[in-house]
Length: 424
Ligand SMILES: Cc1cc2nc3c(=O)[nH]c(=O)nc-3n(C[C@H](O)[C@H](O)[C@H](O)COP(=O)(O)O)c2cc1C
Ligand code: SF4
Image (cartoon, rainbow, N blue to C red; front, side):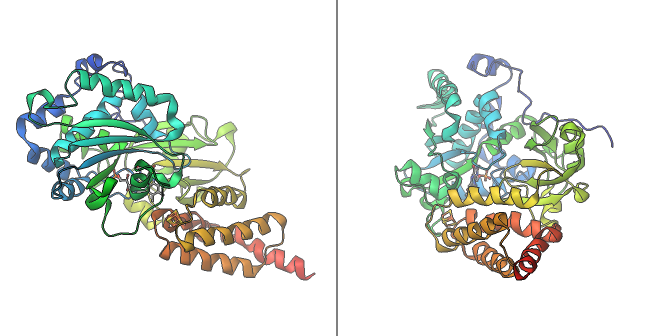
């Protein structure tokens, strides 16, 4: 296998400045992209983002340039930019590193986004479990206010932007745009029906742009180096670099910035140091608990939007959880299902009741009493959940199960085996 290395496009400033000092960020070249924007105007910057081909890193992979232009066209006296740092997908911890090691770049990304879309207010919505970095974020916001990078008439530009931190509610679903708005309004975090969309009537029913922490960081790096530099990495359909969080049975779990196009093999056996204790790889789950299961025999698959789409999965949150052959697939799926059963907000019937049904089936598998009929019921439940759930949680929860059935049909033969035993 060829030698693989991390790249440092978005993470360029990691370790290059004291993350708690604005002065240190400025000395490392921080806020130059903002100065470029204030000197050259928004259209130039929006064009650069369009040309970079950047797709949102929160999971849906929507083109960021298009998203910003759509939000710019929303007219209202108050508009909000919300940095999505909820990071609730199991196995995902790359946004935490961006907040911890380069918070000023995240804030700069928010200011640039706000200026380009004419939004006057911003919120960093941080995962409740990241309380240990809340002070660090608040201190950075405070320093930016003191030096007029935030507040009224930023650097004499005539543009004002107010920013604050909001602690999440400890709920996975609050990472979804509308649930996040509800949570910030002091309500129980549940998605709303669409339309209208969050960008039209989100927080306080006002236009709201919910954008991922990595996307905001990437915007700054793209302006700093130009779209052409970003596009030197990756493939035509998946340009640029991506932060991934690798965990599970590998020697070196952690956050890595990779060019799109590395294979899973290169990530697991190269960057992450290989399987832990030399054990054999079994499967990876790509993109969080709602991500696809890819067997070890397909680890030559490239990490790109297009290759994953062909394999029936997506990049999702950037998580890669690695399992060895000691991890039984059905046990693993039970844990995944437990997670969704716990996190389902209960607002829509397909997800609420579907999860109850799946739980009954997985309990029967564990007890050795599942039958072939249970397997058919599981397929029907997955079909209904995937096609009729209200939000992305119920819709994508089916992906790990469907991909597991597709790639490991032999594992599901146990249903028939159980039935045979029951008959005997
Ligand atoms: C259940 C659920 C949880 C989500 N959790 C997150 C999250 O933790 N972080 C995130 O950035 N996006 C999350 N998303 C996606 C967001 O709704 C939204 O698409 C994203 O923040 C948009 O940012 P982007 O354009 O930069 O990708 C979640 C979506 C759903 C349906
Ligand atoms: S799909 Fe699940 S999480 Fe989403 S609204 Fe329905 S019950 Fe709530």
